Image 1 (cartoon, helix red, strand yellow):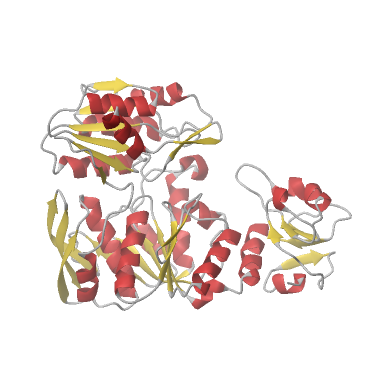
Image 2 (spheres, rainbow, N blue to C red):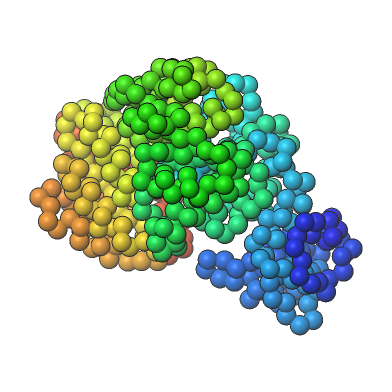
Length: 478
């Protein structure tokens, strides 16, 4: 593809690169550059691609897209190279997002389950659906592993192209606050954007809750229609900032466009009546917890905005299944229950423990840690919430990354120092899980929180294999 074709619609300030040169591939990682490639220097969270322009040229780059051009380099200078990368990627793959119905979900919690529910309902209606998210990416039933919630723009458009070529008509994706701020989703024509909720997370990146909220609100400046949770404290500001018409949903607020009434929470799922534009439908979702009602309403809102009849959506919801790592039951053949959940924020911990408390016959045992190199202020909050809601706590490691695991645990324990809830501190997570299983009592529900779908533990930039399902199975196979 010629450089000028890749640069279509890119706002170029000036260029010293020949426009008619043939480009073999587009790269934003200098280590991957090969002769004839175009290197796009982007400013990252940890480093700056502009530092590696010389290396990219040494490896044979034909030209460079950057915000500041060094002397003697064939360069295309732009105002924002992240936006340029998104536009170049769209050109490189033939604007695949424009040939499918793009749907986005943002919010602290509930994104993954919501996207799976939407995919399920759309497939029931006869559509082929691509899914992009935290757990994995899917093209229909084909699984594609994922590194982050929202990939970099180049990988995103490459994925869209695969989905288009496979016959997908719709794409439902989790849209992280990072991806919105870092322009990874720039230029994607979202037909519907949805907001689940806003609670403390990622303050290592956004610094304040208001900046975090504003990041989430960006989705509603690039969507044609919106769906917003009226029960969330941020709803009023989200609606005020939205640049598109939005429908609202609520559990109990009649002024919402979509309302859930007559809620019934069971150990194996939830039931409620959905009311929308004068219509009513009974909804059954086989995923437990009050938060499942919110997730169901978010998903219903999205498909209703697409024109799906309420009755058809409600009927489809009844056959949905749970998501790996979200209130997932681990087979044990014992008189107690083991659950795995991705809860890794104060609100996430509160939600899952309250949900479990609602159907627990015995003790609720919370096993959890906190991630390293992330917002430290949430650690004592998570500790306090766990101590307040559980009957017993096992405090352990999550993904320590480059931090000392014991130091992270000390931060957690600071929030638990005034609690009478009994606890055990075991730094090694597999050992902690085995301890919890060895000390389980009849009717206990042991909730392993934080890892969810992840099958690794990250220590000093290395991901070591660690699947909690295997750890539980190993205990019973000893």
